[in-house]
Length: 330
Image (cartoon, one colour):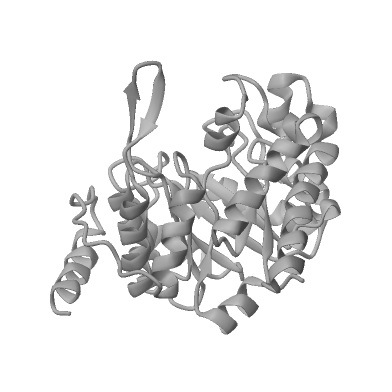
């Protein structure tokens, strides 16, 4: 049984999204430099097991293993002719597990088709035309729709022009709803200088199913960005999926310092600020999802954790100050 983002929000008030895919794939054998999307075919069991773990931890929405699924990204591995195949397989893997969990529990669940950045710069800064960008996302969307995705999930973007091209491409290929998130990883802005307010102002009129932030430099900056999005465009559901803290080297391994408690504290704060779809990104695990779900359900009290002050850039300070004042007043 599946539904829409709006339908789930009407029924529950919030949606718990899943956590990291790449982190979990590395844990079960993916080598650095290898294409995760190929695992949808050659290691489908491992991919499905990751989706299953997130669903059983309490995720209402799982995101497909197709982040680098455009022809631009797959060309780096000689896979540019397999865009539809690999994206359809990604959606089928997630859909299979969502359907099984729905049958087991009676829960209503969603599969979101991940569409990450092309890795190219649009003209005139780069060599990619808007038409080629749109076409690349259209082919990816075709595959995700064929595999059974319920919503197309444009994520980790830094350039608003690329987001708009992705939305146009997705809508030219199918009639699935579209959500979009950007990564605020540069002093409170995206790498291309976009603020949360600018995201909301530019994308708020596109009729997206949801919009917001994911990944980023730290939890505080992502939280500040989604508060700005929610304040600027209150009519569109807002997404928050920050990284599990900041990665640090521990021996030969890259470890994230954001515990499940840290992410659950963010989830509680984000929900209080009006954010509707809440999960986690790089470095997170099903344990993070389970803690987020428990706190948002009210089964556990929110952890009492203080966050570092977010980075600020012109246009964000006043809104953050007002938000902090309101928080102190409760």
